[in-house]
Every structure is written in C-alpha cells, then in structure tokens.
Image (cartoon, rainbow, N blue to C red):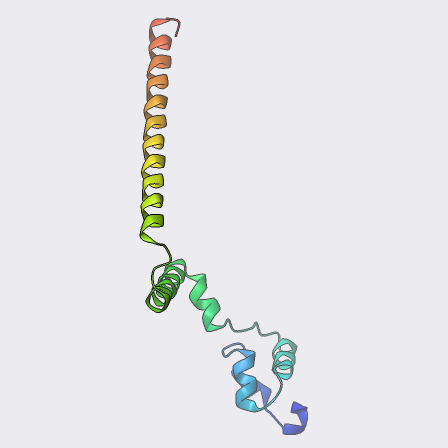
Length: 121
C-alpha cells in the first residue's frame, strides 16, 4: 500500500513519533509504518501516556489531577459518616502499631537484661 505512494521511509521520523501519529500524517495504515520501522531495526516511540506514567512523580500528579476532577464533577466519594469511621479506624490502627512497638522494645530490653546478667526472663 505505501510502496505505491512512494514514501521515503528513511526520511521519516520512525521511532521518534509514534506509529499511529505518523500513519495519520502520511495517510497509511499503522501496520505499514510498523513494518517500515521494524524492517530498519528501529525501536518504537513510547506514547505520551507511557512517558508520563513511567515517571512515578508524574504518575502521582496525573492520579491526583484525576481524583480532583472526579471530586469536582461528582462531589466527595465518601459521606461524612464514612469519613469519620475511616479516621477512627486509622487512629485505632496507629495506636495498635505504637503499642506493638512498645511491647517489642520491652521484650528486647528483658532479653538484653537476661543476656547481660545471666538471669531468667
């Protein structure tokens, strides 16, 4: 198909621009661009979305913007009661974690005391 159109593939930005974008500009199928690119051993260009989501900071920024747009359009995802329940659950979880850390420190202190003085714990 593209051979009849006389496209000079060596002059095209293969691997720089995505196959889909290049096919739209040239008026050929994406498979024709793919075939020309792979025939020359050129790696594919990553799409804008792939470039954006590979960077974790940019991915987080994209996710935050998405959530903000959803909240603006539909309102908060949780009712006040659900938010209060979640906050109470998180406080209880954090208190339990602190408690277990304190218990672990006490056990470690008893073990060290037994090792130092030869006592039975």
